[in-house]
Length: 138
Image (cartoon, rainbow, N blue to C red):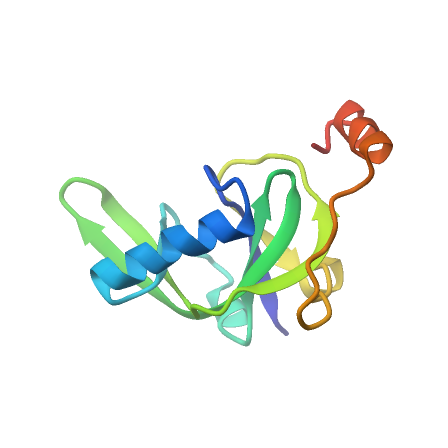
């Protein structure tokens, strides 16, 4: 059964800024990856078609397919996991998410659906955004 990861895109103001940052890494290193401290215990489920769902500015907005998980180690950092990503960014319907550290597992049933091809999900109306902020979701 497929399992996904949920991760904050820290420092990204939008999907476009995240895409530019990733394009720069791909140009510099020839690979697209995200490094994290822990290797997922449920790796087999993630590698069965899983994606990393990125939270940008309080909402899940985009996902990327996880291509490979790699155990790594260095003297400076110790052991860590390199998550290799497909460069294609797939926009999703907006789903509010609270901030958290690290990554979380995300069941397929809880993941937001992909947005229709070419659609850019709209920001919530100001009244709704204020209410979501009051609830601690933004």
